[in-house]
Amino acid sequence: MLDQRLQHATAVAPATIANVAVGFDILGFSLSEIDGATGLSDRVRVERVKTPGVHLVEISGDDALIQDLPDEPEANTATAGLVQMAIDKKLDFGLEVRVFKGVPTSRGLGGAASSAVAAVVAASAVLDVPLSLPERFKYALLGETLAAGQPHGDNVAPAMLGGLILVRSMDPFDVVRIPVPHDFGAVVVVPEHAVDVRLSRAQLNEMLPLKAHVAQSANLAGFITGCFRDDRELITRSLHDLVVEPQRAPTIPGFAGVKQAALDAGALGVSISGAGPTLFALHDFRARKASIAGAMLQAFEDAGVNARAFHSPVNGLGAHIIERGPIL
Image (cartoon, rainbow, N blue to C red):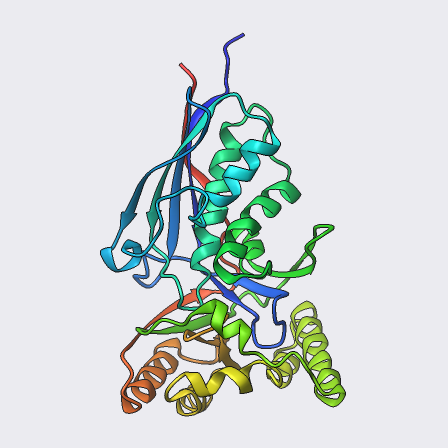
């Protein structure tokens, strides 16, 4: 019988929207590459080689995206998890890794998670025994933690699985796929300035008044219930962040005007993706995505902020293998 093990595999993983207004660190959804937004994914190629260890041999992509990325495997978000995996699995062969970076980092689009997830999915494909889903999540989370300073799975889980995902627990691994109305989409507007994720998290006030906790819990429950019931009005009433958005909004020039412009144009809800500065606006078939995008871009321009916009469904694909080759 011929040996069908893979010698090399390439995986792609999408950008993601984290928190989704009401689910700080526990909700996220994946973005698809449509409307010309062809760069919003990371690709990673992993090849089995004789020399043990993880070898990061290439990082490519737009110069602005890769100029500050470390080339040491232990320090790069794409390969940090693979280093630990190779140790845990006692691999007697090496992994040669090539990263193509398409998702910008420090923009609130899950740039660390996308490369970490793509790397783990590609590496799993070339192992003698592929990683289980909880293992893939665990090793990809190491890369995300390297970037953010704290483990949180609301980028990793949707990048890996696609769609809208609730991370109920990271350890033990427990995630839930949440259905979304079939016509739901998101206008995503990305300002050109970066945000330091570690600093942004460190600045959050961890002391939450009980009244705010109760109200935010009600919004989270209402949003999820609305998704399961296909209840657009409940989703709209619930999509309000009372905890994190008020703390981060002042760091995004023009935020209030951009949010109001999107709502006036028909968006169901608007908030900050991850640590920002990216904003997302959810909508359904009743709203014109071009009108929402145009209104948000104009409001940012009025505030002196350069930004770009694109559109994606909320149920985009997760990470998957796009190229593979057997051991000869």
